[in-house]
Amino acid sequence: MDDDRSTPIRVLIAKPGLDGHDRGAKVLARGLRDEGFEVIYTGLRQTPEMIVDAAEQEDVDVIGMSILSGAHMALLPRVVELSRSRGMDDVLIAAGGIIPDADVAKLKAAGIGEIFGPGTSIGQIAGYFREHARRRA
Amino acid sequence: MADLPGLLRGAVADERLALARLLTAIENDAPGLRELLPQLFAAGRGGHLVGITGPPGSGKSTLVNALTDEWRRRGQRVGIVAVDPSSPYTGGAIMGDRIRMMAHAADRDVFMRSMASRGELGGIAAATWMAAAALDAAGYDPILIETVGAGQSEIEIARLAETTVVVEVPEMGDEVQAIKAGLLEVADLLVVNKGDRPGADLAARHLRAMLSTAGGRIGRKPPPIMLTTATSGEGVAALADAIEAHRSVARSPQEAPARARNQVRRALAELALRRASQHRAWDSTLQSVSDGELDPFMAAERLLGEDDMA
Ligand SMILES: Nc1nc2c(ncn2[C@@H]2O[C@H](COP(=O)(O)OP(=O)(O)O)[C@@H](O)[C@H]2O)c(=O)[nH]1
Ligand SMILES: [Mg+2]
Image 1 (tube, chains in turn brown, cyan):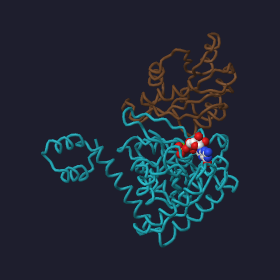
Image 2 (cartoon, protein in one colour):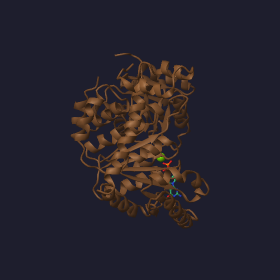
Image 3 (tube, each protein chain N blue to C red):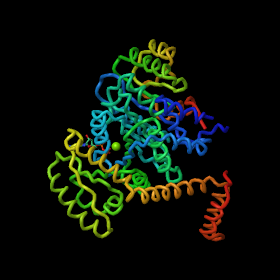
Image 4 (spheres, each protein chain N blue to C red):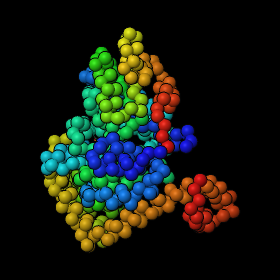
């Protein structure tokens, strides 16, 4: 089996939490499309259950969450836990937002692949997804 | 390599991740898919295949959501495939149709999948058809296929459905002149959505008058025209009734054979193109044609003549 990815990487972009604007998430979605990703955009105020339900039906390679609300310690590990409990063990889960350094280590230990701080370029995020998303035939 | 028969068994047993992974295999034309097709179609449960098409922003996804509300009230399990165009430059896509379906996010009896069209050679019409077959095998009925009624390939997808609903809006004005030919041909039901906007009634009447003239010209009975407001649900129960009523028309001895022939013709054209494009000599053959060394018919003969995949 060759290692080249013959099909685009599928990414779910979600905005968990209650804060009410999603400009950043939309910019990211468009940027990833321009990098050749297939982006499923789910909109605002997603609960972890909604995110994982969507990720399951869409069989995405990556779940990317944009979070501002400060509820990251409650929401992000829950997404990992639900995904794993549904058998989605090989789905890469990442997040972006303003998250204190002390929490970043805890989130990574909980299974979040990477946390992208403010100012990360879309090219960097795309590069990370390409490197770490599962491969399939 | 994925165990496709295993995924199909899982999908039939209502395992959602198995169904999702089967859909991925279909989308990617994964190895072993061809061999699975007889089992896939044999597992069908007779779900009603409904195409929803129309210009961007006309309210298709909102209407799919409202129809899903209605069918869930009637106890049906609803499957949805939403197809969005891939960028011809980067191959990427943004699929935002789930935004309108948030109310059904936690409903285990609704299954929605977004698919990118992946270009002319991606075989999207065949993939959509097989995806609908997978949802059918998993017991969803109806199965709704949302496509943007813009390009030829989207119209082709709509044509594979048993019942095709074309969604327009009151403001369409002159645009409708430009699109009516292709869309009229595929519409089994025509919806004027955004019925809350001024002029909606008038637009519906206008369209009716126009279509009865145009319909006469192409020798086909004009489709019924219905008015809906997808955001409030107004007119949606009547639309669901009309869609259900059309199911038996599409399956009647008068219509079924012609529809089946049409479906096979579409699927064949697409598969032939796709297979030919995977031929080892695809690039060199196209080069020979553009160099004037080979005529296009000989080229097609060469690319289809033997099963010689790259
Ligand atoms: N006023 C009004 N707006 C609607 C109606 N149906 C949809 N919309 C709005 O039209 C926009 C596009 O809807 P969407 O369902 O995404 O359209 P699609 O691109 O055809 O799928 C959204 O802002 C909807 O809220 C309707 O019946 N009335
Ligand atoms: Mg839509």
